[in-house]
Image (cartoon, rainbow, N blue to C red; front, side, top):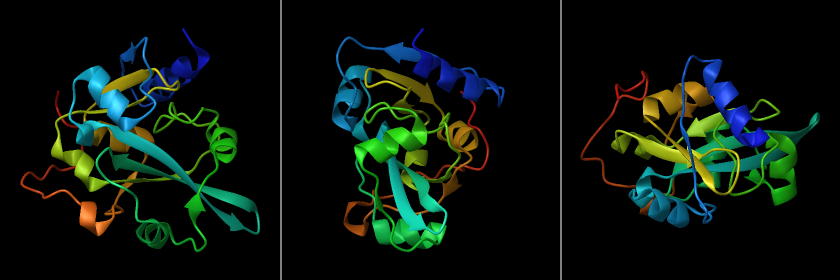
Length: 178
């Protein structure tokens, strides 16, 4: 097993969650590729995006877990976490802060702790798919369980024009039963 996959499994196991990592010959680097590979809707794909802000102590990382159909509104994310000057991390910064490569960054199991904010649109589905440490590996998880694994705060961070309508509302405060 790839060490990055093991880190994801170990992090989940520390919270008494067992995950099954699915590997693909093709890349699942983008949300579109991942949705096609697993046969899911684009909105079910979790984009794990790393942002940073410069502080007196160096770079302060923040992870946004966003539905595959949405884009992060950086001003909203900055307001939620209370950091000015928030920007998207470079590929090198994201790697250095998480220990994973772009396209394979999972929502948890990073080598450095960071605040995580989760898009409430992920709660529209009974399960979502997230990267499992490499650009060709994913895992499926109920959104409530993902919130617990990532120790995420749920807040509206998507751009207004791209927010999904909300015909279904799920409680992300507790794990969903699968």
